[in-house]
Image 1 (cartoon, rainbow, N blue to C red):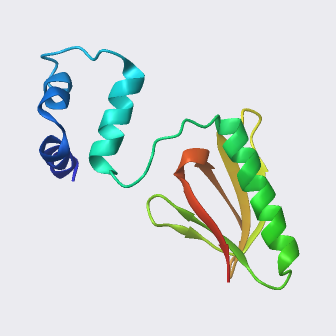
Image 2 (cartoon, one colour; image 1 turned 60 degrees about the horizontal axis):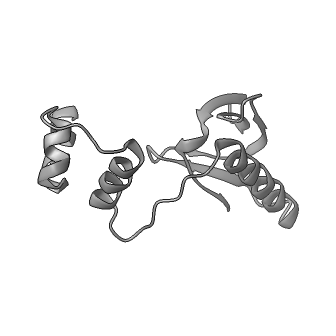
Length: 126
């Protein structure tokens, strides 16, 4: 899996980016290289740098809004690895707002899951 991911990157990166990746050339600036690599893999989206605390606060607000909008509907989170955390009872931001603690119900009882804020893809209700 790791090898195929690197192969994919080698195909989609520009020759200059490939030289930087191979260590033959140093990047002019870290931010511009991140942006260039991002556009190589996601050309239809723009790159926006967001403070993790602000993104975490947005997720917390969205969670509360969905919970209040339809109190009977179950709120779930979709993560980057396509995991779905369903029946979320509560979400708690950790002190630095880079991690989120989810509390959710299952047939076996209440469970907990901690994830990084950047791994959250979407919040929805069923």
